[in-house]
Amino acid sequence: MFVNTRQLEIEFGDCDPAGIVFYPNYFRMFDASTAYLFEAALGMKKIVWTKKFGILGIAMVDTGAKFSKPSRFGDVVSIQTSITELRRSSFVVGHKLFNAGELAIEAHEVRVWTGVDPDNAERIKSLPIPQAVIDALSQ
Image 1 (tube, rainbow, N blue to C red):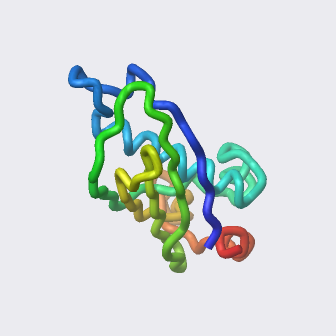
Image 2: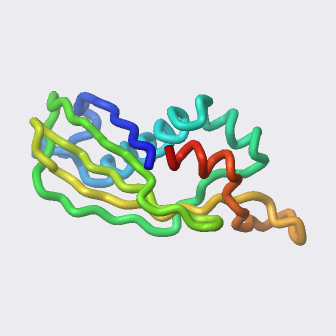
Image 3: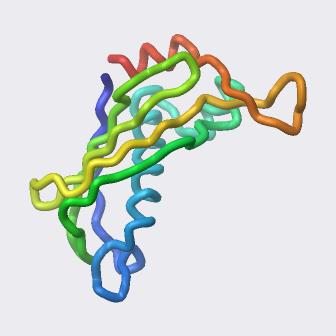
């Protein structure tokens, strides 16, 4: 599967009073990493591919993480993101965050390709992932 890696520096606002990353901020980083993965695979920003494929987005239905090593203000970390499983309308995203070359966090997201429900415009509905997206993420 396609893998995207990005580096980022831990900023002051990411941290709690102890100077380590406040854990919900990791999930913000992982959400952005998923968007960067799709951008790299599809060659376009999220605002463009959601319009191109006529969807509302990729809704999160499950997430979790195993924390092995803290990250602190000023650390430069690397996040490797990949699709670990593709289904009809959902997929699993894996994230590995490395700090100083060591695996610090291993996380996952289960997301659903979603659009407006044709039977009720006030609801969202899972939709099949287009073959072009599957092909781009499978390379």
